[in-house]
Structures are given as structure tokens and as C-alpha cells.
Image (cartoon, rainbow, N blue to C red):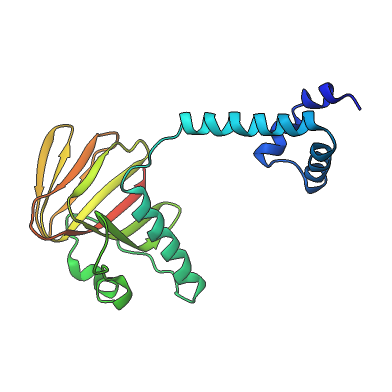
Length: 202
């Protein structure tokens, strides 16, 4: 076989990225054992792609982990028999009692120890996700291009800063972030701020 032609075919790059079929993977593995040049090229491509990934890696924001864990928990609950329900939309007339059936559940409580935030998804549809969220210090700066984000404060207090304008929120307050507005949350109470978070497709 023409080893140089094989190396230049792109198949080794696809092998390292894991996009070949089982049959093609076995072929590259066997050829790597038979030809030192192919083995060396597999190693070179692996190192090159790893270095590229490390150079372009982005550290996820602090809210990514709690929301990912909340999604996994939500999926597990339905796999074990929970029936999906749709949470009421947040409005200026929203009351804490509107969410009583979730707030009173034993599995919807915050753990004794958690990092800076914790979340429990209570409702999810393609158009809207609603969760109970606990914030110890606040939430980082972000901008939503295609989601309307609303808050309803249950416990504690916080300031929501939207385009440098401060909105102080207290239990019973509801607030919607204007679309495409840069905002962040700062907890102002000595206890974590517990709230209902709604993210709705805009």
C-alpha cells in the first residue's frame, strides 16, 4: 500500500476524532500495528487535536453545573415515574401559593451543602423551563438573545442589575429581564435568595 497516500487521505484525523465506522476503526488499528509511520501519524494527530482543544477551551460559567445537574435530576425523576406537569406562568399577580405543590415536596428542597447556587426544575416544555433556584451570592453577567428570563422572589432579597440600572427585589416581587439586556444578580440578604426562575422562548 502507499503509506503516504493513506496518511494524507484524512482517515487518520477521522479515526482520532472517533467518527469512523467500527470496520474502519479496526482497519486503522491494524495498520497502526503493522506500519510505524501510521502509528506515529496517529500519535501526532492526537497530540495536535488535544493541543488545539486546550488552546481553545472555555471555562464554563458558574451557573452551568447547577443547571446541568438540575436537568439530569429532572430526567431521572421522569424515568422513575414522575408525571410531567406545567408550572403557571410568572406574572405581576403571581403568588408563592401558585407553586405550593412543588415548594412543599420533600425532594424539592435545597441540600445542606452546595456551591454558590442550586436548582430544581419543576416544569419543562419546548417553549418554557421553570425552576426553583437558590443563590448564595448571586448570578453572573449574561445576555439572552432569544429567551425572556423572569424571576419571582420567594425568600431573601437581591438586586438585579440590568444595563447598569439596579432593581431591588423582595419576597413576592416578580421581574422580567428585557430581551437582549445584559444583567446580573447580587444577593443582598444574609440568607440565600430563593426564587422561581422562568426562561421562556422569545
